[in-house]
Length: 99
Image (cartoon, rainbow, N blue to C red; front, side):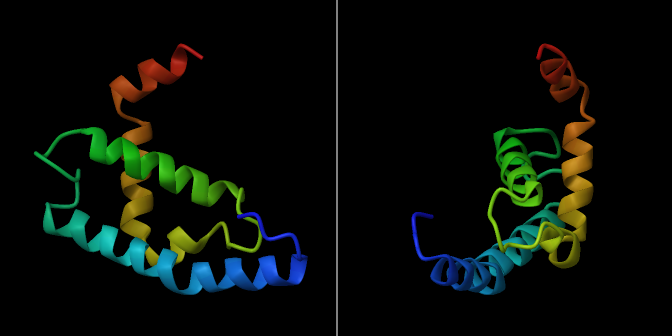
């Protein structure tokens, strides 16, 4: 995160996207599938779903230069569906409406 040399920072972030982030996205999607594809635990919205939502929103926002914003779309399309489901959940919607 705090690499000052731009070339080194770009290389480090590209490597991060190619391996650890890619693996994490694939494993999260496998976990979601193993639990029926709706939510990560108990068939309902839980803190696990909120955690994944926050992380995916951040990843897709472009906050990390040189990490493609469409990485989750390519490697975890079911996670993107999950993100939309969580963001459309009435409780999440009501919380967001407060701001």
